Amino acid sequence: MKKVITMVGTSLFENYFDKDKNSKINNSIKSNYSQLKKNNPPHCQWDKYKSDREPLRQLLLKWSANDQSSAEIKSLLKIQSELKDNLDVYLLATDTVLSRLAAEIIRDRFNSQTNCQITVKDVCVIDGLRIDKPTVFKETGLPKLLECINKIQPDCLNITGGYKGVIPYLTIFGQVKNIPTVYIYEDADELIEIPQLPIDFDFSIIEDNYYAFEELARNPYKEKLIPLLAVNREQAEIIFNSLLTNQLIRENLEGKIEFTVWGKLLFKHYAKDTNYRDLIGNIVELKLFKYFVEKGCKNVKHSNKELENGSHKAEIDVYFENEDGSITAIEVKPGGNVPIWEEKEKNESFEYKLTKGSFAYLRKKYSNPVIKIVLYSPNEIVQSPKDQIQKMCKEYKIDWVEWLWLKVHKDYKTKIDWNIADDSLKNLFEKN
Picture 1 (cartoon, rainbow, N blue to C red):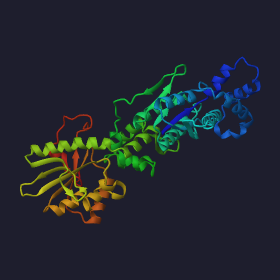
Picture 2 (tube, one colour):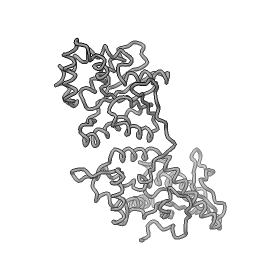
Picture 3 (tube, rainbow, N blue to C red):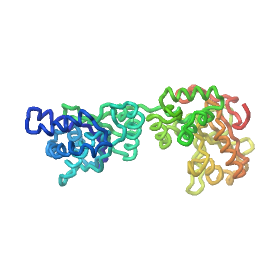
Picture 4 (tube, rainbow, N blue to C red):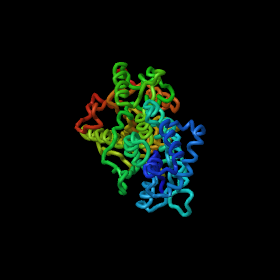
């Protein structure tokens, strides 16, 4: 069973009245359609136009039995044929009476058939998805559209029908979420899939400013976000303006800061997908590994997985032996998104690792191990995570960890020819 989202436009009506344009039988119904098309009433006026839409429903339901009657029907049949699997379909209508009517007719067309391999599970009308009101479309329609798709979690996006203006957004959404996106040209029968391109999105701007993005939902004001962007006010202003320029955030008419469609999409995706964080973190770990090897440290290991505590693996990012026989174990995390509390970050949190996990185990296994936690960032770590770290250390009486800030090269994510200098490792809590 495959879940397929299909955007719905008005090709069902357009195809019928184009085919029937010389007939005199349905002049009154044509008039109903012309009136609805001209006025293009929003979905909230659904009941008002009942006398116009219901005769259309009865006539077009018969017409929809034709496999070529609409872009949506034609494409769904083709998708089912190629996938050779049953389809659970979600029809997403625009904020218009005609789009909802078309979606319901298509739903009834498939669901009235016995032993049909295509079942329409729901018709969803997307509030604000209207191209005649660009501001509403951008600020209300698109966010609600992407939220709806996120909730459904489809196996396939069918963008054959509906407004052509949403195609770029859905294509990018499909690339970010790794969802196959397909369509059929109007006068062709071949199903075309937009390939998953061998590209990735730069989530570094999300990672570096994670605290500000996280705070945005609670305190949507610039003055609340600035301290979370950088320690230096001037630098924070530069970052804030770059977020506006890159259209990740916007300032609304009330003076509040809010996510744009893309900002919300990328933030939520980054928060759920750890692949990007793991990749960048590995690069920094390898730089630290090289740094300690070149300093002549003994038996340096990267991502040491040999230490085990029952079923729990006490993995250490960088590990080496000291001259006095003790060990040094180093944990590496991004300074823009520090995993402090177990309630939120589970086993990846410092709270867990220091009290129950790998570092707690090392303190039982070895005599006086040297524990270092390195937070990497090209900019000084903002105050919020520092305060939380100190709160955690006070609560658990943790005075045996050396907290460090690794000031990495400003292009550390895109260039690999940088090295760690002695003066780039600083005490996290020292005044700069």
